[in-house]
Length: 553
Image (cartoon, rainbow, N blue to C red):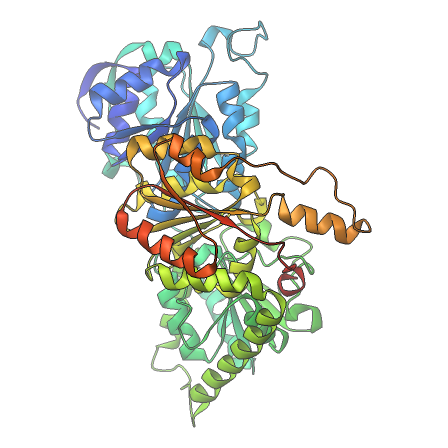
């Protein structure tokens, strides 16, 4: 432990965050957290405080920061309305296993739970936060704060990296005490869950018995070294790599055994063994996502969560382990001298050709089904660097990107996962750009979803965050309207939008903006925006797009 120092709870919070190598906090100052914000200014000069225009954006930015950088994202909000405003973002981070630390104000300690109508009071705030976090604590004394921050960081770095929340009442933030900061190395080591030797042996036996194994790779493989190990394992055992929508980029799209979402389903349909790594293995078409399990393939599933192995998706072999650790251990087991030799007699070349055939067939179906969206996606693909981060709002081009866009890094695509959070995109992209300042970041939005956080154009301008925002405008909540018409005999109520002049709107915020009249102009303007290294907005009027659902089902 470090030497004791006299400081306030807010100063202790800031000093411990600095010790944890936090470099950015997203927040909005407010009454119950004044001492926390002041502490950041006096005791953590290396931490940038980015003030947003809405509390929802603080947590969305923290999520984007975390997913792009691989480091914990931190947000700071007042209690009550502030906490309620971050819930959608925390639920999104929870769905996507994103390491976000939400530091939340509270009422004064003596007022908690009394329902007396205190400023920003809501009933059972702590219970509310527990629904969207893996760990939660409330500080009862200033001297507790450093250890609680340290524990929060440990929770974020072990097991499934889901959000955590730390509540601190204002009297505790203002309280002076003799405080000891907690050095990171003083924390006892906590092991990342690894597969047991017997589990590895059982999986080896499954692989040895299989004729057509397929690796199904999900979002749990996007961070760390998992992709490299999976690529090596696929080559070693002769298995195609079927990437889920959340797993895109875990293995580069141009790897000869990597298959996108549609081509991957073709491989899965012919498999006799599915090895799910870092995926929940569930989708629109059934408990195993319409996979080969429905026609008799055996299923082995590697996941850090026990819940992943419960009904309706009970695998034949369940291994509770970290995706990276498990993939590396399995690859190492196949590198042992006693391991069977594969490939033999041109088998690898045959597998590569089979994958190429699946990709070609998938591409043909995609071009027949969503050709208009593909024109825009191809222009975008050509305009961005290989390591760009594309944050796809819950919009039509983003759905199409699950089918017709190539990603080459695990952090190259950010989605809302199973939460399907409309409106998350632009603020999340700003956080991603802060977390990865050297990479190009493109935010793909619809006109509906963009409206939810468009006030953050002011944040982008204030801090010069170089995100290129595309706003695809069809004058509607387009996905909803198309589905309504298909389901209700051509009727659509409540989904039409009357939009502002997005170019003029961006200009009012001091953001350079333009309008693209074609896919070619879109590509040119995206490339120019990336090169300018400044906030940009591109208004993209689009037609009504054909449905992607038959290809995504």
